[in-house]
Image (cartoon, rainbow, N blue to C red; front, side, top):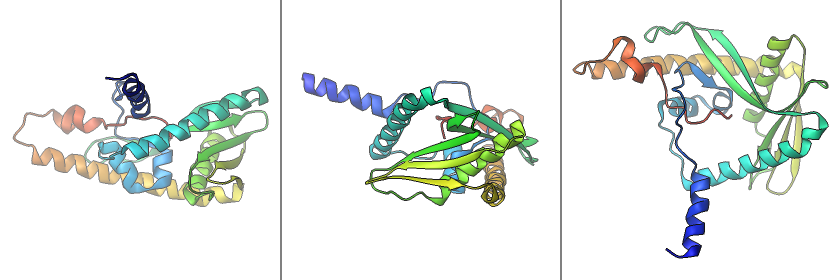
Length: 226
């Protein structure tokens, strides 16, 4: 293998990343980013059925690199990066037996003194801030308000194909956006619950622990970042 091929292979491995080797993630733990985008995407993600092409991984790599660089540049302005936040919704899973849905999100930039959240987005082709960007941000605003008792402002900043765009999500927008996320979370939970039951019924010939064992309780989340 030539040196050129070795270098190409090295960076290809960096872009493709390594398989998730952490602890199994419970099936009732859902991503705010996935729910903001679509029900179908979150279901496929939890079932390990979401296929990513090299193009998808390249786009993700570019976005992650940009996030990391921007977060580094603004840390001296009082922002906390990659702030993980959780919220639990009471919901009974009829087959799996869970009593709730645990939502998890990662806030790109949080300024606690200013009570401000910034959600970073990037694209090589579009300058448009999409509705699902605002759904994701509004959910973080709601979750943080529930956690701290304080209201937070929120702005989406997008590094687009030809420009940088910014759009604020107002407090009045939060109830409708949050209702969308909760509705989608319940739909995802009910459909995952049904899939687990159907899979166990179709495999009755195998010796499986009650409630489907590890395969039923845990999904195939290979990324915690939203």
